[in-house]
Image 1: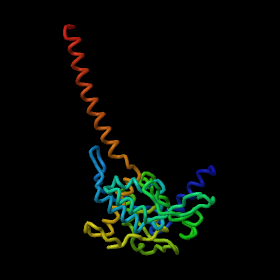
Image 2: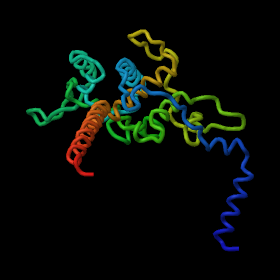
Image 3: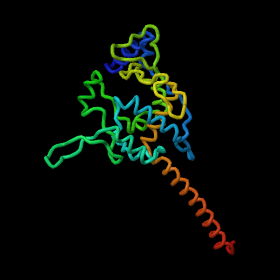
Image 4: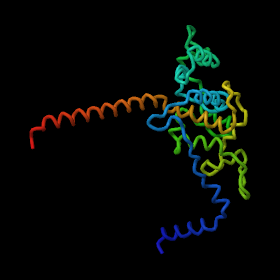
Length: 255
């Protein structure tokens, strides 16, 4: 028997005798299929959900995850006023300079600034998270297969491991994460935030809101793109009708 076929046979036998719990720990469940208001040709973002999602990100997620492409002035697209954006920006400090003495200095952030990273560099981020590097969330919805459904499922997927499965130290069991073992703890807790609009802050609600915010962050021009596409389609429909009418008129006497 050729060596390659022998190797495949040995691998198949090895997988066949692996206990079911061990194999189950490798295979992630498919993400929950949710309906999102911004999906579809005519879909638009829910501004109230976006503001709640930004609150969840700001109060819960931003301690570990950055959003390097988010400028504070972009938050006006979520429905915040310019004064509110200025107040949000002023809560952060950014490095600026050099000054007249040639030194860098910190100052309160302005709307034109990007939101600062929670860590000065990757090494500091890994040192603070047991070697794991928290990914930047600016494009996370586009970077993960399943998009919004995967992010939402991951945030609600923490549970006790099944019998026979041992979770390594520093890891957590999540049924939607590939391999099931994830370094990020279950950061969303019931009533972990207090929504200004009175919405009940369940884990599922927080997960849904922050997922919509991250979807907007990954594609803030989504609504403009859809409006442009609809206008283009309407133009093409009208143009097709005019060209058809013109064709019939030109060839009306030719039979």
